[in-house]
Image: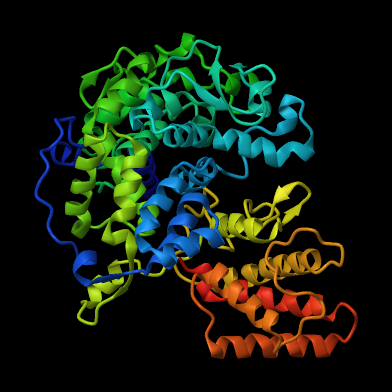
Length: 564
């Protein structure tokens, strides 16, 4: 068998199985009946976080910020108020921005490059970063708006609206509210059918197809993102076919069992996506609009009518409703949110828990906030430590200590200190062209597609610089003689020294605010010694400012800060 032909067949067949009937995704079926839940590993071996630290985890996961002093006080005095505070967090408008970032870990649309540049639309080079984020966030914004408004999750793939801001409203055929600012519910005007995120330019700019791929890669992406069925993970076994031209290639796809096993489902799905099929991947006119006149080209090029895993489709108009009716869509939504909040992959041992969550999700009419409440209340989410008798395999599987994501670090530190790290208009914690997103453990959507789960040297170095910048900014602002409002250093002045009651009170307040744990005597002594050493080293009138900047930097770099 020719190595070149084997490689080409592997690329064309999208990693299919030679046993079609056994490896195709299951066809749509009725929702399975709910079963009686059984104790999970987390419930049996896990010890939950105490109320203040659990509130801290929930606040960071839902809003990307630390809980306020008042929220910490309330939950410390009465742990039962945690549920009330959680409801308040779920109604906070910052939930939308947070879930744009969180869902991006799954959908991977916030990338640093597309096939077109801002100047292709007459925009300036200085608008590159907002241009990229405007395109990449469109599908994420649709899903996040469905979530914050607590609409049924099916709206994500059936809505007749999109989300747009000033940039996308200018470059795409979109009806944007007159006088609107920022992200607003808007409508495409180019005749594309309703389909929620499936009909957004942002999704298909990220998951583009080449002229000869005929949207197969897009069909595979759709299955992976919304059904949690990844064609690329399926085994492959085939004989050497003749793949010298398009005709023989298409014949192999139809006739070779290794290819037909997946392509019998993949190609009919791809056939429904030809309204987004572009002849020129670098033509702004091509990429900006939906091409209704090309919808039937899938039948011509792929030689198959549009279908959803055996169910005929009229075309793209049926795609969203059919996807929403597939039981796997709901199952995938539950799995996606579970993995994002548990900060780990789902394994076989989690299936009973997922089944229970799915039953609750369906009973709540697919309301996403109901699913979030179920997840946040579960032992898998709340686990903070394990019992002594926990088996090693359980310890390896459950995530008891979870690193803040790059996005969480950025929003939490900005909320705490007001500090943002930018360069030439680029958010340094949200890009990798000029910034440090991947170094901090984030995803770039192309080469790094999973967030960092364990500490790494690159993260330590990037966090050090971030903490130093934040510490210096807040110390300079809070200790300024004419400061009228303060963020973190509310107890001390430039004249406060270790041993003063206000100095001790300030350290206690910082420990509680940053970590949700009381300050212990050993840590207090270490921080006081650090402050004294830095002040003695400088000796100028700014010594208090520099000393507090160092203390804050060290406290932000403490593992207790970056771990949920």
